[in-house]
Length: 525
Ligand code: TPP
Image (tube, rainbow, N blue to C red; front, side, top):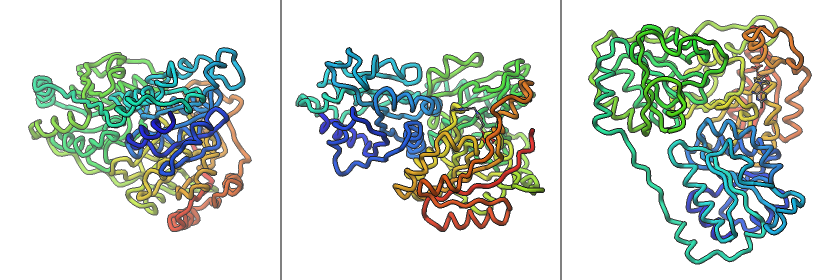
C-alpha cells in the first residue's frame, strides 16, 4: 500500500515530506522512495509551520506526517494559521494497528477522524487498508478545491503492508477541474456599480496575492483612480505599498474601519473575509451611504459575513475581467506617495521603524518577509517597499510559532529569493526548533530577532482593554545567539544602525542560515 501511495504523492508533486516520526509512522517511512526528501522538524508546531511556509510560497499543497494524536495535537495551534491562510496542507498521522485501537493501547489515536475536525476542511481514517490510497487522493483534491485548506488523514500502520487493489492505479492520473466564473450578467452588474460610483474604494485581501492577481488589482485601481486598502489583520501583501493608490492596512476594529472608509459609496472587497476584526470596537459596519460588494473564492467566507453582498468566484479571473472591462475614470489622478517617514534611533537599541528602513536599503528588493513581530505593524507598512507577488507572510490566525519555521519553509521553497524572518523575541520561542532544520538542511534563511524584552503587542492590548500591568508581559534574559549556535546556526547580536546593516550584508553574503539578534526599543508602553 505504501508504494502506490508514494506513487500518488509523486503524481501530485508531493515529494517533500515535512515530519516528525514515531513508532506508528516508521512502516510508512521505511518505504520512502529515493526521489522523496524528508524534512525533519523537532517539534510538530514547527513541522506544520515549515510546511505552511513552503506551501504559501509554492502555491501548491504540502505533505505533513506527524506522530499519532500527540504529534497531531502539538501541530494544532500552528494549524489555526493554515486554516485562515487557506493552505492546502495534507496532514497525515500514523495510527496504531487497526485491531488494537479500540483497546486504547499506547499511541492509539482514539477517534482520530474527529481530532482535528473543527480546524480542517476534511478529516478521515480510511475504513480499511484497501481504501488508504483513495482516501489520500480525496484528501489532496479536497484541500486544493476553492476555499482551500488543510485536511487530515490517520492511517493505521499495519495498512501499509497490505496489497493495493489493481484498480487503485486509476487514482494516479485523475484530475479534478474547477470551472466556475461569474456570468456575463453578474460582471455587467459589477461594472455598472463601479462605473456609477462617485467615490469607490478597493479593499484587498490575501487571496489576491495567493491567486497572483496583484497586477490585475493595480490595473483596476488605476482605471478607477480609487484608493486601495489592505483588509484588516493581513497575512499577505496584495498590492504594491508605494503605489499612489495604496492607503495602508485598514484598522481591525469595527468603528475604526468604517470611519476610515467614510465618504466612499462603493466598497469592493476582494480576496479577504469581511472582515477579520481583532480588537472589539463596536460601531457601524459601514459608513453611511456605502454599499459593500465582496468577492471571495471561499463559500464559507461569503456565507458568514455579517453584511454586504457576496460573489463566490475565482479571484484572478474576476479581477482581470473587471479591470479589463471597466471604463477608465476621469476622476483626478491620485498623488504619488509621500516620502518614507523620517527615522532615527535615540538611546540604546534600534527603533523598529529605523530597523525596517535599514532593511529596505540593505535587503534585495524582491526579498520575502515572514513577519511575526507583533507590535511593529504600523512601522513595517510605513517603511517597506513591497511590490512583488509573494513578498509578505504573517500568521493568518495570529497564532505565534508560525514565523520562524515558515521562514525556513519559505526559503526551502524558493532558493532564488532571500527570505527574511522578522521575529519578535517573544514569538521566536514558539518555533525556535526550526533553526535546527535550517542548519541541518543548509537552508540559507535570515532570521532577525527584534529583542525588546517584552510581549509588546500585549502591552498595546492592555491599554485597549484597560487592564493595566498584568503578570506575564515581559521576556527578559534570552540569548538568541547562544540558542542559534546550539542548533548550529551562526548568529550575532547588534544594537546600532551601523552594526545591523553590516550584519544584514554579511548574512546575505554568507549563503547559510543566519540569525541576527537586534536590541529594539518599545516606545508604546
Ligand atoms: N500564544 C500563541 C500561540 N499565540 C499568541 N498570539 C499568543 C500566545 C498571544 N500573543 C500575541 S502577541 C504576543 C503574545 C504572547 C507577544 C509577542 O511578543 P513578541 O514576539 O516579542 O513581539 P512584540 O509584540 O514585542 O513586537
